[in-house]
Image 1 (tube, rainbow, N blue to C red):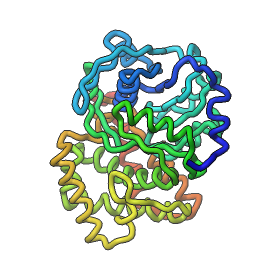
Image 2: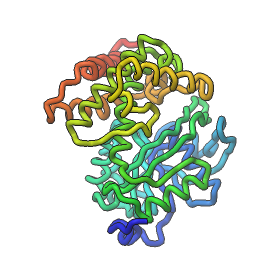
Image 3: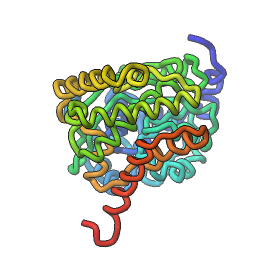
Length: 342
């Protein structure tokens, strides 16, 4: 692998850590990662709060679907109690992340990465721990946290990890290998920024349609009208990545590069094909945004669609469809928590 300054400092501030992995957030993906890493023999601590922390403390992490396991994992609700970990994985929802990371600034981590939606996560980690401690990451992995605390593991395609410099490194390779060996497919890659924005471009369309249609993923990926809207959302995001000089690829849930570069007719056919694959392989798959909506959790609209619009405004890029969905989804989020809302 190519040498990288990050290799030399990867563990200098977290030698002999209390845990190999600290996972911030015990929702679906955090629980899936924590359970599999613990089963593989790694020392893992979950950082969680509220009812979810109580569930994990009482019953452990319970996974069903693509895996079937139940395992006890140490859980901290007072984050000041964590002194160090080899790797911090941020898997909580994006609202409130900056405040939580502020409460973890005392801890020592060899590396940090986030599998949250949207590129803002990298900025938050760099602000809290320094850019040399941050790896880029994106997960084409899915699950659903059920009310009883069990997690349904629905999709296990790949978790990409890479240096922000775009190079390969020993630490990214080691972390990816450990996660992969534990049963969650993971790969160390070059050009992680392009991959993150490729996923983000696709995710904006998927999130918008999931919240407004409230349907399983395959349904709006096979409906001609919703597919047309989704393609146009992705194309607006493609104009933003072009203005930011970030090349996008087809290595995402949707082939973002091809959707932006081909004809609209060919783009519609590509999305419909993905929809049929979801129907056959993961008919129960639902976006986390839809899960959040139905569970009454805050929607990640400001940190994702809002962030995209901020970057677009800085570059003078017009994204009217993204703007419209941002306003609608923000209103949905607001109105359901308004006084008198049911």
